[in-house]
Image (cartoon, rainbow, N blue to C red; front, side, top):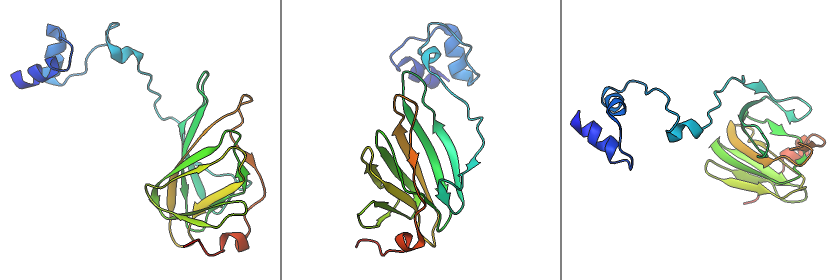
Length: 174
């Protein structure tokens, strides 16, 4: 028990006797107006996974909200889950978009560019206003984090036409 108390003291702040008790017993610590934890904002996930609208996607896609814009911050993020063959429609973002692949294998393309294969750990940045699409390969699932800032009007994306099967089936760049 002394090791736990000493480790808690070494964190840079001296713990009071009551706080030290909680450190030893692993009981929840009561709120204290002077602790830094009071400034941390935690939003508990209460939003259900939602199916991606058919106007925006081809195939089955599921979206989990990660971050919603809240003034003064304009960051929006979602974990997007694509089933094999599923993909976005062509679209643009007023402030650009970064996607970070977390699992599976996917495809992406900028208008006029080659289809690119993307894998876990890959980060793809699409410039502001750049027409593009992304999705899963025909035989693999793919999940990515999609991150973008909304503009002054709260717009994060402008959706275009669906990616055709011919565009989707184009051989990827080597």
